[in-house]
Length: 155
Image (cartoon, rainbow, N blue to C red; front, side, top):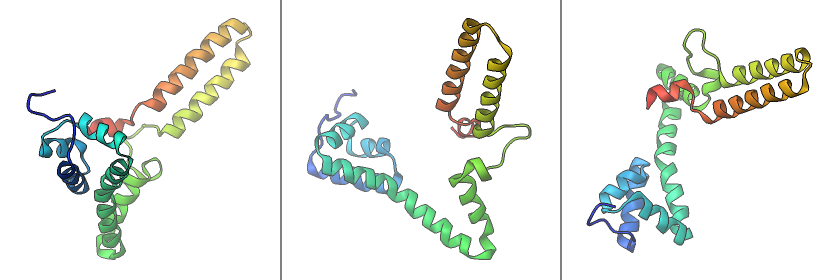
């Protein structure tokens, strides 16, 4: 922890944290503003459940504000791009643009399930089949845990 940074938050700092988070959605920016760490904010939220609830609500405020603006813009036919943006970002599996030859997470899941069926059908040796199925299941879990390629490109 950097010197001069507090580990606990007083009432004024908590109010400031909530104000900054309502605008930015960022605990990091709030920590910078009040001169503490994100860990101190999270510890205060764990100790004071009311503050924790307010913090969660504050994090949603900029999302709701911007989505409502997009919704209003999308209702005007001149701003159809706002509606397209909302669909692409709220429902990326269905509406996000994909690179040519890319697969959605659902397509990958279906392909892995089909591959697993092939293994069961074609490999007679129970031990070999079990080892391969374990590897396929680990791969499926790893893929499920990774962000989509589009998310990695945006980071």
